[in-house]
Image 1 (cartoon, helix red, strand yellow):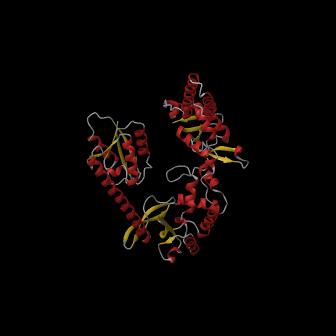
Image 2 (image 1 turned 45 degrees about the vertical axis):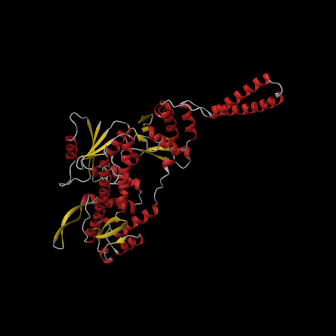
Image 3 (image 1 turned 135 degrees about the horizontal axis):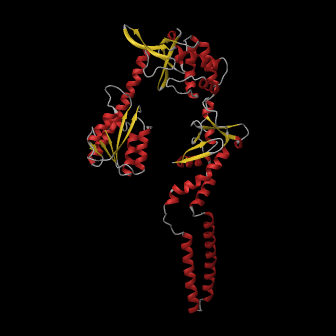
Length: 481
């Protein structure tokens, strides 16, 4: 099977669309050649975190793909390191890469040489583009212009005059701005926590810009953003204490205007043209509470269950997380995230230990069926102790024959025979111990490994075998990969 991969990071008039990339590749295919199209829209080529690209790699590992066509080399990768790792995998699976624009394939020596040269230029181009973007951000921020991209929640773009030239600035959207003010009031004045704010917002039907439910991270980003504050001297002092780099002179942050922020090695904050919508005292109160809130440590809930990340609610489809009641690991529960978001009331808390026991019953059957030792007959190597035992027994038989033929050395031979007998007994005990300690059946091998594995090893095994575990109040259903 031939694969066609296409990628478009940003839709512009001058950019090459995914349809055009695909059609160009199809024209170069042999007549009646079967092909499969993989496309990623809106993803950068600087890394491999792209859904269609990852699916392509999985199909290659499964032996379904023999060659890959791309319109241009930088469509598949712009990182030399990522590309080298990808080509190593292609070689291991006998996959050929063909580029339409560069007119080469990796089956020829010259093609491999050109490939390496082009990847070096592609990575250099990517770094050059990134540098231009950073410089553009700083230049626009210096002029107090909007930095581009999607406007923050609560704002839209409007046209203003700046230096006798029309440009874009942020303008308040009253409906969205009112929701932002409520979030700040609930957190900074009423003392609600993030979960209560999210639950209240979703229960009241408030939606994000993309018409989705609010999440903890979404609300937290709004509460942290300097774009909403009305600049003042106290706000300026807070920025300086946080170690931010200021783009403008101090007095420009004290005019009630909101701020623009971007990261270029360090966090830079510029004074914007738009008016802030949150008063300084409230914004600073929210920041002070967030600063003392502390960050969550990665290793809490994920280390309470080896199923963390695989469990979803059967009623709403949201993921489930682990929560304890302070009485130890025996009293930890899977809780539906949708319940916290205010969109699900179906799943009650289920004990982690109970769910794990139910999944364990079917996990071993799947492991024995799909893991290598369960389906592939491995070559059995002779045991060194057994070989040594065979040599000793042969030597003992030889000594017994010599005793019968020549009695002049009978005493020495009997002493040698006793010594060999003791060695024989030792080897036989060693062989019996090995047979008792190393079960040979796949079921026993899995049980021995599972009983000694720690939670991170069990979690890794579950991630390989289990796609998801759906929970209802009265049952659980396991879906394997």
